[in-house]
Length: 239
Image (cartoon, rainbow, N blue to C red; front, side):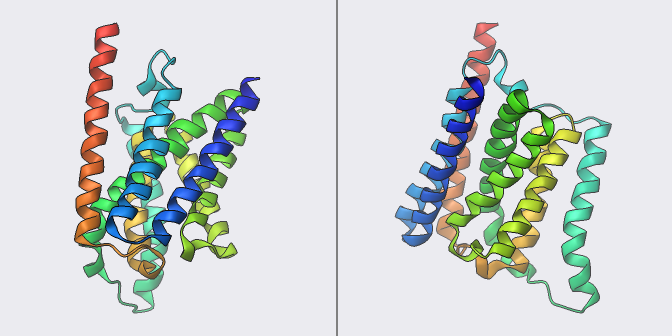
């Protein structure tokens, strides 16, 4: 019964994610984009609903993999970042191609926010849920697959080759998460530099980053911090 429930929850959330991201990229006015992307896709579906579904866990933060970093975690983090970032930048540099670093400033905060939602949901929630019910290998594959398929919501990531590449990338993030001892901080900081580089090299596939998107992302991150603080205080009171 728990396995069926896990599959049902994952499938439902995945469909809703794609719909919200798709609507956000169809209705590009800042207020609509904020509602569908930041509020519905991010804060509600990727953050608050998983937190609510985990409310019966003895320690939500341990379940999600929110732990301190040790030497093992730092080593895995460095290896995966060097591999993912270097694999994209080095070939470009060798060929003398110009990397548009000037695009990065407006993308920093939105990418910090989006990366958090991705890792919190696909690694912290989905991967742990599937690992609990189906084992590590299945969890890694499902996490990678769900990560790639949610990008169907982005109109310019709907090419089969891109989805296949994102599946491989998602497997990499999921593997880093598992090898680190299910540490969400490692997964997050493996994903984030990769997101920065991918944005600069394939900026035309991303939604246009503006000052308004930065402001909206700051608001979303502030809400996340407030919810986290409230959860920490609630956990302390229970203990």
